[in-house]
Amino acid sequence: MSKPLKQDHIYQDKTLKKFAELMSNISLLKNKKNGCPWQGKQTHKTLIPYLIEESLEFIDSVQNNDKENMKEELGDLLLQIMLHSEIEREKKNFSIEDVITGLNHKIKTRHPYVFEKKEKVSIEKAEEIWKEMKIKNKSDKTKKNIQSNLFVEYLTPIQEAQHLNFQVEKYGFKWESKNEILNKLLEEIEELQIAIEEESKHNIEEEFGDIFFTIISLSKYLEINPDNALRSANKKFKTRFSIIEKILGDKIFNQSSQKFRELWNLAKEKLKRTHKEQNDTKQNLD
Image 1 (cartoon, helix red, strand yellow):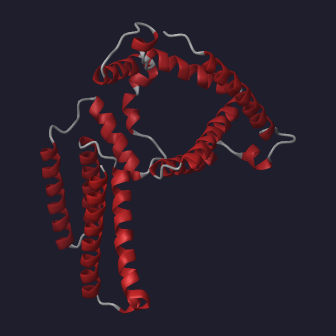
Image 2 (cartoon, one colour):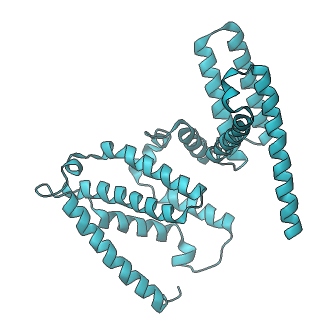
Image 3 (spheres, one colour):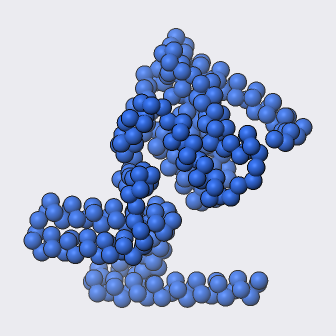
């Protein structure tokens, strides 16, 4: 392993000092006598909504390529990690030191080609080693309860569907082709149509859920992030509707469905032309 450069040592020293200050601040914040009373009442479960919120805000900053906000949101995420660790330190179970120790161990054991053998490997080989080492390093207790990996609380429905698809693939339960998933999607849509015709509220909801789950499965196979895809669709919808709003102004509240459909198609064509002009301009500049 190559030796760290001088500037790396300087960076590490500065960071360690800042981290020591952070640890001190968290300790003071959680102090039962003179600390924050709100923080003193928090538990792992009461803090979970904030962890989810900060994670989503960081994702949003990444999507917007907002570097300043990314920095802030990473700080908020680090705060959550520190608070959860401090809760357990107070109970004398583990501390942030143990968290970091465990993480360092995991990084080293799952990347033996970096820290031990020091050899070049392909991306595919790196992923294969990661999966092998992950299974190897699981405790006996975890191995016996491996099915519990399917049950994770506090995930959004989309995240849970992604998680389930990822977990069952480890056991060899996976789709063979995109056409297989597409055929399954068509099958689920037909079943929804039958449920609608039968006017069965329960079956309609069940089949609707099956369609959602199949679409998430398809997104995994196609290596598409469903949140990003839906976010793009939402953005497209808002852009098109804003064009309609500009055209109609105050008259937007007194339009028929037919008129909205006509204007929707008009907005769709206008955006297509705009995108084509932008692409043509970009090609000319290149």
